[in-house]
Image 1 (cartoon, rainbow, N blue to C red):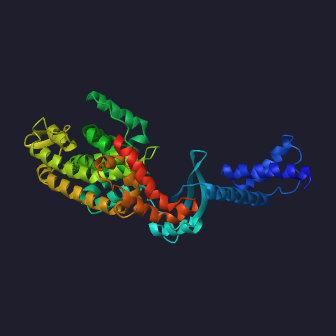
Image 2 (image 1 turned 90 degrees about the horizontal axis):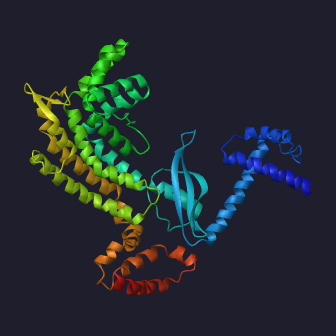
Image 3 (image 1 turned 30 degrees about the horizontal axis):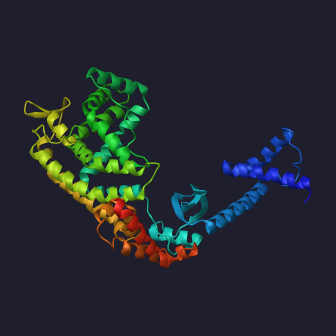
Length: 447
């Protein structure tokens, strides 16, 4: 090929790569060619100037990148397959497959392919990944945060109290009520300042990580209950639209039932440890050992929470007991003419709703515990979690410092599961157990 033609193709390949990288349509390609010529770029020629040519160039670029990745994977010692789901314009489930590997001592994530899966459950995803990577030892690790959210969704599915609170939050949509009107938010702030408070702008009750969204919107709604109700009462009288006034009056009737603030406080108490767990899973640096340990500790935490709440309910007048959201609510309830008020708002059916609080706590905690165990059951079955992560957790070493056989069986299980891969990267399987014993001999005296 002539030097002139090679230079022309190189420039056009660069333009095609730019379009693909910036996610621009190929129809931009002819215009970029024309722009380059206008700017005085020479040797572009008059061929391969259509959007079809750009698509062909991009296909070749993808093939070269894929071949480079294949060679890289052949030479790397370890890699991890990541996937993320999406739905295309044909409403077909697509999985984006990525490869996490180590290059020159630094972790690097590279795109592998887009796969259409028969089924978007764990088995279907594993089949798609196996077809692409060809690794029977592949271990599917479902996103811990997604599991947590699915577990909570399962747990709350049968709880009418949570559905009621969630529906009220969705119907009233405090977020949209104030987000779209600075005038309303200024009025709300003015009311709050009159009470000596400051009200944060309500957050959206929905989002990608809905535990965080639900927790925050519930917290804002409970802590500023009186301010919101007072302002909405004003809007129900002064709004220029008759339909909107009637709608707000209906919301007020729902919100002034004692079940709303009481259930908000109950769910905040139960969601607090789960919200902290969810937040820890969203850190930029992920430690699988800590993640597994946190999940295992949550069952114990929920059991302790139930004991704490029972004691708190029995002794809620005792200032030395731990202050829960429900206990704060109970302390702030005022009785005026034999009727209960919270933040100057009269509550209906308070005695009836309050008599079932402990049963509500027990039911919620039991549901969450069962659903968490179901969603994280792979921690008790997968060799990756049962053995490998357990070996990496140095806390287990401290507990077994006098056990000469500690980890021997676990090492054997891990080696057997990953044997094909280990042999492929040149590991001598017969030496692994011996090296493990030597490692313990060096480490246990230090521990």
